Image (tube, helix red, strand yellow):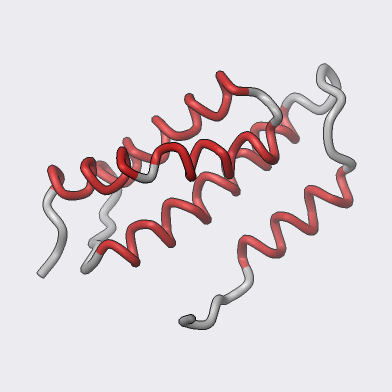
Length: 102
């Protein structure tokens, strides 16, 4: 059975520190990390994605917030000192790599 909107929000907000930290590690900007978290939460509710269980939602949210943080950093590259583009490419490749169930 798919998670309801209320369950999705409860799960995401309970994982907020971890998800925001994943964004901050890449973006190095606390406000951007918060904005990215909100974007991912909104996408979880508005996209045509069905989450069957908490693990699927958290996996999707973690990958999504890292990708958004990488994109955010790339867009601001001229104005912000940050991670080298090669490092951003490695982070992006790692985010896209399939994960085995642990």
